[in-house]
Structures are given as structure tokens and as C-alpha cells.
Image (cartoon, rainbow, N blue to C red; front, side, top):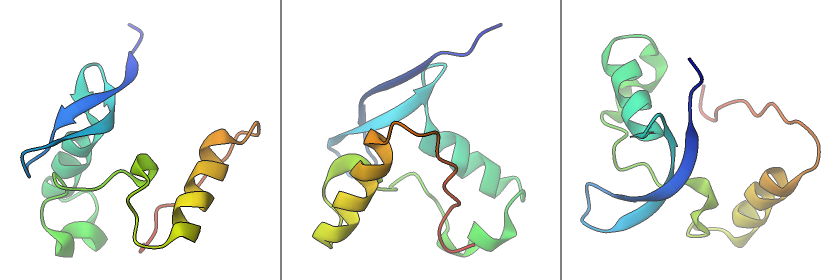
Length: 87
């Protein structure tokens, strides 16, 4: 079975839509939230729920340099392996 990956607007827990990656129709934040709540990443448990996670590609990060950096990685013709922050 092949998985499907889309980027579509999804209603956030805050009552507005945001573009999220969806894997087989399920927003990636739901996968992350379940992964953490199942005890598979104790380092992230301190953040509680990740259902309100702001996608880095939204352009709404606090620092303009962060937004530029994210888009440089997204637009890069190279295959990139980016480690998660804070781990």
C-alpha cells in the first residue's frame, strides 16, 4: 500500500485553518501528538499537546530570518535531513 502525502488547509485547535502536511488524510500534528502521548519521545512530553503546533512554512515565525531559513530548506534542490529542534 502506498501512502498519500498532501498539504492542505486544516482547522486548528485555535479555530482557524493552517496548511499542514497530511499523511493518508491525517494531519502530521496528530501523528506527532499520538507518538508523544504513547511515550515514544519523552523529551517532547514537557510540551504537552502538539495539536496547536505552528507549521514552520506558514511564514508566521517570530523572526524573519527563521522564515527565510525554512523556505531555503523547503525550496532546496538537495535532499535534506533536518533534525528536530530541542532534542
